[in-house]
Image (cartoon, rainbow, N blue to C red; front, top):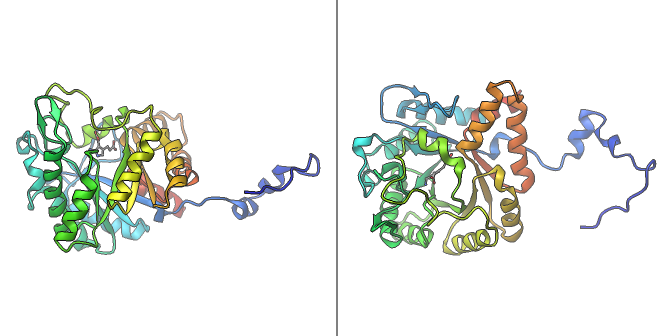
Length: 335
Ligand code: PBG
C-alpha cells in the first residue's frame, strides 16, 4: 500500500478528521453490523424456558421452545445465524458420547424447532462429543489417549444426523486430524453437498472456555487426561495455526474459525492475510464472562465495551463473530 507522504505539523493535523460524528463516519475503515454476528446459545431439555448459568449472567440455557423464539428474534434483529450447543443431562452421558448420534436427541429437536420457527435463519451445530461424554473429552478414550480415527467415525454420524435435522453449517470443534475431510466425504455421499462446514481450524487449549463447561454441564475432565492439550493447540503457536487452517481448507471447509477470540486477534490477522477464505472468530464464554463481570461491578460501560470488542474482530479482518452478546449487540446497534 502506498501512503501519502507525511506532511509535517501544522500542515497536517490528524484531529481534523475526528472533529464531528459525520466525518468520523465518513472515514471509518471498518463497520460492524448485526449481519456480522452468529448468536451462540445453549439449549436444555427441561420445561423451564430459561435456566440461569452462574458464570454467564444474561446468557441462560434455553428450552427448545425458547430456542425457537430465539431464532425468530435473530431474524427480527438481522442476525444471520444461530449456533446451538447442548446441555445434556448426566444420565444421558456415557464414555462414547452415544447421545451425540441420537436423531431424536436434544440438538436435532432444537434444530428442527428453530428451522420451523425461522427458516431464513442459518443454524450451526458443534460437531464434538464433549457435551455427551462422562469424561468431558471431545473424543473417544482408550488407555488414557483420545483416539483420533475412531472418534472421526462418531463425529461423522453426529454431523450427518445434524444435517438431516436441517442444520446448515456443521462446525467441527473437536480438533481431530482429518475430520473435515471425513465430514465432507460423508455429506457428498449422502447427497447433502449444500451443507456448509465451518472448521474450528485454529482452536487453542484455552482457559477461556471455563464458563462454557458450566453452561453445558460438561464433566470435569477425567480418565487421566485433565486438559485438552493433546488435541487442541498450544497457545504459544502461530505457524501451526496456519498449517491447521491450510489443511482444513484443503479438506473441504467452506469457512474457518479462530478460537478463542480477543486474545488471538494476531492469529486472525495472519489467517486472513494468508488465505482467501471467510474467517470467523469465537468470542468465547470466558471473554463474555470477563466483560459482563466488569460491567456488573460498574467498572466498564457495558454497551460500549461490547461493541468495541466486536469491532476489534472486524478490524482484524473477520468476516463475522460467534458471540453470546449477539442479540444484545444488535439491539445496541439499532439504538
Ligand atoms: C467443545 C467446545 C468448546 C467450546 C465450543 N465447543 C469447549 C472446549 O473445547 O473445551 C467453547 C465455547 C466457549 O467457551 O464459549 N468442543
